[in-house]
Image (cartoon, rainbow, N blue to C red):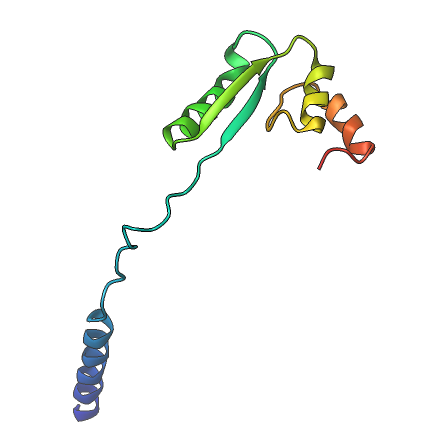
Length: 108
């Protein structure tokens, strides 16, 4: 019985010490603000039901402070070319165009 009381007292003491550690301090207010960049998306035409996930992602990015630019293209070849050139960050289109660029080693 004595060992049980000693063990229980020791366990409570360890828990009390562990719970009494200081909480982490808040970051300094003079920290450098994060630079938010502009993200460029392509559009294949007027938005429809298939674009809902992309539009939700764009709304979330805007809410987080990013600037989002959307450019409409008439041809998917132009979208792939813009992605390869670095004029777009995110593009939508047919998978075969992306695979063609990947096979040529241009898309990472």
